[in-house]
Amino acid sequence: MRELKIFSGRANPKLAQDICDFLHLELGSLSLGKFPDGENYCKIEDDVRGRDVYLIQPTCPPVNDNIMELLIMIDSCKRASAARVTAVLPYYGYARQDRKDEGRVPITAKLVANLITRAGADRVLAMDLHAPQIQGFFDVPVDHLYAAPVLTNHFKTKNFAHDDIVVVSPDEGSIKRAIGHSKRLGGKLAIVDKRRANAVETEQKNIIGGPVEGKICLMFDDMISTAGSIVGAAKLVHEAGAKQIHLACTHGVLCGQAIQKLKDAPVDSIVITNTIPLPPEKQFDRIEIISIAPLLAEAIRRIHSNKSISQMFGDQMARES
Ligand code: R5P
Image (cartoon, rainbow, N blue to C red; front, side, top):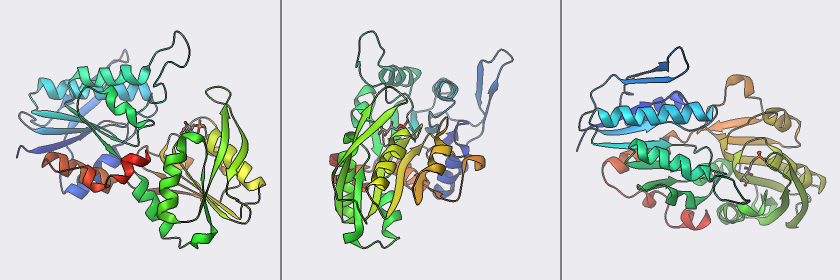
């Protein structure tokens, strides 16, 4: 088998190091920086000729910098004759711009997929894409991972009584995810009727299903960005008499006032994965970070040795997303 090499961009080097630790591999050496005029610079310091290369770079904020850095890392590896380059995108930014929902707007999720493919990525490894059909935006194979098993296990360790649990979908787009979690964790299901006024404002109207009164409500989302959606849903569920509220998401984008909104929210705990780094100044006592490094490491090991990725999850996850 060609030698496996892993390199990290500057978006989440800790995650890349954790992945390497699981694989008992040394993180590849490269130099990244900026020229005085702000243009990005990259030099791969290790020999990658004929190697199976994995570039770890969530395209989280600063989104444009991180995307550009990924593109020039891919280009550097291709020009250095890497046999295969896999773009590992634990978080794929621009994913929410995935359709023309009004005239004269771009489909940026497709544009960025084109950029990554044209730069020379032979494969993509992604996690909890905002919409699973984004896999089709890449004209190269995409392996899609799910953080759901990790989040489910987190709540299983809490030993909540099944009859006490209500899994609450924070909007209609997350219903399949909520159904999956409720199958694994037990309990009833509820859906918050969310209306989006614009990119940053949402309104939560009604709760369908439940009831949530006196219950432990668990809410799962793919991402928390401004926290408007999930905090709005949590407030509604709290007003309806929930006994406890716990939030879980894969991607903690946590931009703008998100942290303050979460601190002020009537929630008992928030669990997020480390697809995006959460700096210490944004952390607080009710936020817990769980690592998806073992999942990504196992996926890289399997891709490298041509083993199935879907067997890591069974067919169930794909149906839930
Ligand atoms: C919505 O479609 C998504 O699943 C998230 O609920 C949403 O994008 C989160 O954004 P924010 O935190 O800004 O409400």
